[in-house]
Length: 97
Image (cartoon, rainbow, N blue to C red; front, side, top):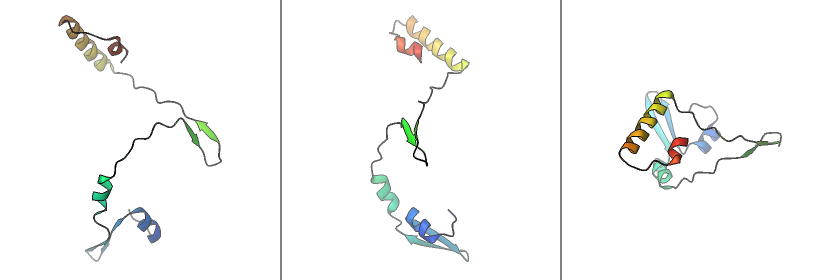
């Protein structure tokens, strides 16, 4: 990141690299990455509403599932037919995907 605001940079980045006169100077804690990797990151549930800058509550639409391409449909159909020919169970869930 290139910035002229030193306070902003120090609050955002725990390790800062200064390149001056072909010399690299490190400032901060170089071990922060190990500490960051050891922290567990929890996945948040998908938001259903959002508040804009004016305080208005906006309801978000759920993401649509991507449609399968023609080649993907043919491949899935071929696999389904092979499973039927082998006598394996084919669930109705596989038809909906």
